[in-house]
Amino acid sequence: MFAQKKREEKARVEKQEKELRKKRRKYGKTVDGSLVNVGYMKTLTAMGYSEDYALMALKQTDNDINESVELISKSPDILDAAIVSYVKDQEEEEKRRKEKGLKSDEEEEDANKSKINEEKEKALSRMHKELGATLGDAENHLDMTLEEEKALLDKYSRIING
Image 1 (cartoon, rainbow, N blue to C red):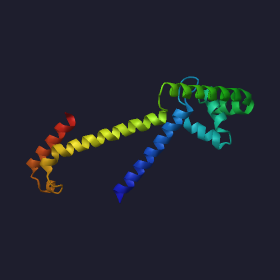
Image 2: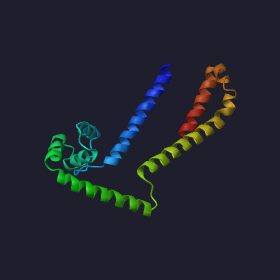
Image 3: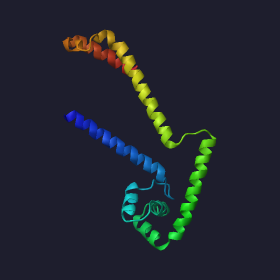
């Protein structure tokens, strides 16, 4: 029961981290080059500001939430121009990526994850082949002597490290 809860918690955390990475990529960087603060985005949208205004304000003010609120309130015309420019830049970037045959960031991440999983499966298969003769039946490892178990672990260590 405990292990199942741990796995569920780990899966939940991994999902949240993936969503956070996705939002960071989506939001991009501020004028000074730092990533847009996702927490501040949530705060500004919770205050009732549109995501577009919140994003552009944080980008223009280098994540200064107070300046962002002031900018949204006092100079929405500046943000409108920034939004139009941002959308145009995004469309041009997507067009360049497609012309070069490049995948989107999300497709690239999924491809990398798939490749890693494939490599893990190959390694696991190779390990089973290498250790299969030593282990025999899956339950036999419970009947090993300490010397046999040490020999198995040494062999396993050589496979992993070499």
